Length: 202
Image 1 (cartoon, rainbow, N blue to C red):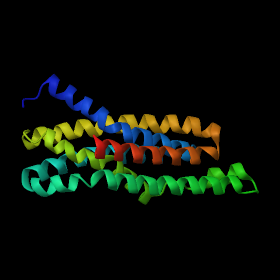
Image 2: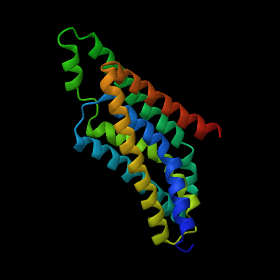
Image 3: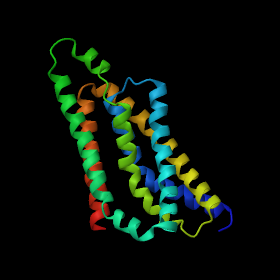
Image 4: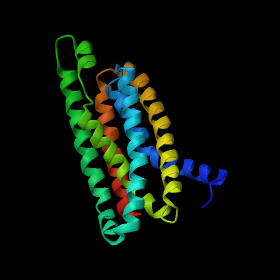
């Protein structure tokens, strides 16, 4: 495929579609930690963008080398995403409930609680981007430079949407205070089941 406006537009649309789960999870992160620094805000968006860039490339390599085993692995993707997101969502809900039950200086305690560690963000990035491995089939006919460019566009779109998602979540979270973490946890549970149902039944 030659580089063209249609190629860029198609890759951008693919990026929007793939980024929806990451966008929602980013908003949940903003809800849970409305007082996060700009640095963390940027790291979250970069993390989701990087993994959405990386997974299609890994998928392209797998399709070109170990296609049969990759197809078998695809069947496990909905289960992996469900388990990871439910684990993180459940943990966030429990921490939110504990924060609400604290008696002394509740609002300050909520502000200081660290809901999102590096490990948690890594798991979120993997859980929301692992289905992008399947994009390897869609770009299997591309030469590697074109596949790389398409993945870069997908990652860039994801970064922009996730940056916006965190901003929206922070705005809402600053108003909801301790309830925001619980709501964010339920959002992660919802996304986990949505990925599972979409991948397993459709």
